[in-house]
Each structure stands twice: as C-alpha cells, then as structure tokens.
Amino acid sequence: MNTADLDLFIRTADSGSITRAAEQLDISTAAASAALKRLEKQLNVQLFIRSTRQLRLTSEGERFLVHCRAALESLEVGKDSIHALQGKVAGEIRMSAPSDVGRNVLLPWIDEMMDEHPELSINLTLGDSLSDFYLDRVDCAIRYGTPEDSSMVAFELAKVERIICASPQYVKTYGAPNEPDELKNHNCLIYQLSNRLYDHWEFSSNKNQALGQYKVRVTSNRTSNDSDLVRRWAVSGKGIAFKSYIDVFNDIQAGRLMRLLPDYGTPDVVVNLICPTRKQITPAVLLMRDFFREKLRAVSS
Image (tube, rainbow, N blue to C red):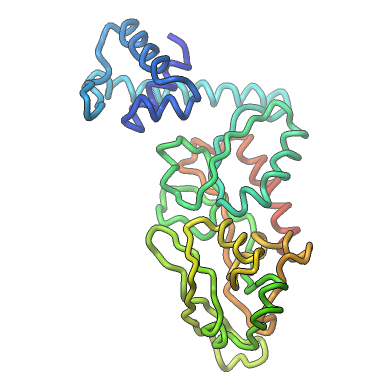
C-alpha cells in the first residue's frame, strides 16, 4: 500500500470525483480508477459506491478515510522533524495566493526562497477565494483581511495602503479627478468577489480631518472577479482602479500607472498568511511566513 494511492483516495473522497482527483495529481482518469481498485483489493473492502451520477464513500471508506488522513499527516510531521534536526527546510508547501499578488509579486520571491532552500517544493494555486482550502488541500494562503472562520490561524504579514491609480494614457485622455466625488464622472474598474461588488470606495481627507471617513459609489463598464485583470485594464488605459499598493507598486515604479488623489487617504488592508489548522504550521510554512513578511513590509513601508 503506497502513499500515492492513499493521497489519491483522500483527494477523491474530498472532491467526490475520480476525474477531479486525477487532474489534481496530473494523472489519467483511467490510472486513478485502477489505483483505487488496487487499494480496495489490498484492503479487501469497497471504499466507494459508484454510479453514473455520483461517487460516495461506503461506511468502510469513511472509517478508513479518518485513519488515512492521520497516517499521511504523521508522515509529513516526521519528515519535517527530521529536516529540522538537520538544520534545513524541505518538503512541499501547497499554497494559495490572490491572482494579482501571486502573478506579479510572489513569483520572484518564491524563486528566491527556493534557490536558498533547494529541497523545498511549492504547489501554487492562484485565486481570490478561500473556497479551495479544503478541496485542493492547501496548507496556507496569502489573503487580504482576517478570515471569517475563527478556527483558521492567521499570521499578519503587513499592513498595506490602498491607492487610486490609472495609466498616464487614461489621464491624458480623460483627465485626473481632483477630489473623490469626481470619480463619479470617470470609468472606475470594479472588482467583484463571491457576488459582492466592491463599488463603494472609502476615503478621508489628509487636508481636512473634519470630513472624516466617507464613501463614493463608482460605476464602470468593466467588472471582474480576477484582481489581476482589473490591474491589466488599468495599465491599458481602460479606467481608474482602487488597488492595494503591493498589487501595483511595480507598475507605479515603471510608470505604467500613476497615483491619483494623493491628498485623500484610504483605509489600510492587512495581508495575512492563513493556515486552515495548526497542523499546517510546519517549519517550511514558518519560513515562508518570515520570508514574505520581510519582503512585504519592505515594499509597503
């Protein structure tokens, strides 16, 4: 009984699909089906009830799943313990990151960290939702804000400023707003997540503190649930964006985007490294936390 078959069994049980589990492991559906049958033969029990419409665990499968998870987790803990004694960090980190930050910020940092720790491997999933935590068996995720689920463990990496920005091309064509209310006359690129439309942008005046915090409702002909697409639209001159500074600092430095409304502040946003449970807090994850914390704070300060 090999660990690859056990891993496949867990993924199939979690996703409810042999095909989906096979895709996660980059093997054919036929190979995955054969591996599950091999496992059932070794155990001399039926693990799944198969039909044309669904796949579900048998009572024996449910009982075995508990022990299977514990066995693989114990093996991972053992590997980490050995490597820690040897003074090195190794193993796989399955992580998730927002679309924008993942592509444009984290990739070179991950390369740098892996160059320093060649026995470390990364399985990176990009997306702005936390829904992949359990389905894709993610060890940790970079996310803005505090998780709603209090059972998760969140390590604060940095507090980041949010800014209003647009391309020089857009400003040349349509002009720049002088105060937040003028955003109503501009095409403001809107981000959407889990059916929530982020079309109310919050401000405070650095010049007149008596104004306090206030919001401006913006409109747009472009809305997306992909934060990187919103950034790309801004760079190509399609409108004004409201972005975390770390999402766009490379574009600002390169002149592809310029900051607007510098006299008006916006609420900072916290960047966290989130683990589903304390079991995922391995030496490798702690290394990543400290590495990204240093990088992000250098950029955001």
